[in-house]
Amino acid sequence: SKFVNDKWMIKNGFLNDVQEHKPWWWNIKVQKLNLSAPLILLPDVSCQKAIEILQEKGYDQAPVVAESGVILGMVTLSNTLSSVLAGNAEFSDPVTKVTYDQFSKIGLEDNLGKLSCILENDHFAIVVHEQMQFSGNGSSFMKQMVFGVVTAMDLLTFVSRNDKK
Image (cartoon, rainbow, N blue to C red; front, top):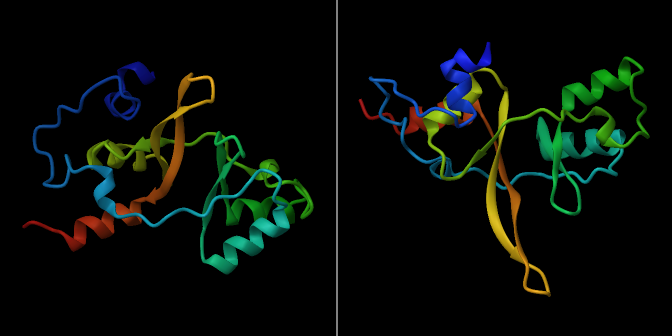
């Protein structure tokens, strides 16, 4: 069960990691990864256009974000292609038809140890940054902005380049 799985509890913020022998990079903040700005797709982009954009820009995946800023999920090149080829989606369908709506999010202030726990089960995590926004009447709300997409390769590259043996 999830509630007795320490890694699930850590990943979801219910438990602080108590690992005794943490690697040197464990407590470094996610913001130190120096991620490039993400490619973001709006939900009305067609599957055909999403494939073209991802291939042209050299990306394997991209977040799908509504104009309001709500993160709807992730679209991957392989899932989009396989869905179209299997007949589960048409090239003309909106990309939301092939979007993964279950994904992990991590903040810039979270540590690489938490990211490592997420990447043990997930292929990627969406890096978000919370931003306070005010409307004309003075009311405020927190909005999550997509800051980047991080993979195990990003973490491995960071660790290997900065290895403190």
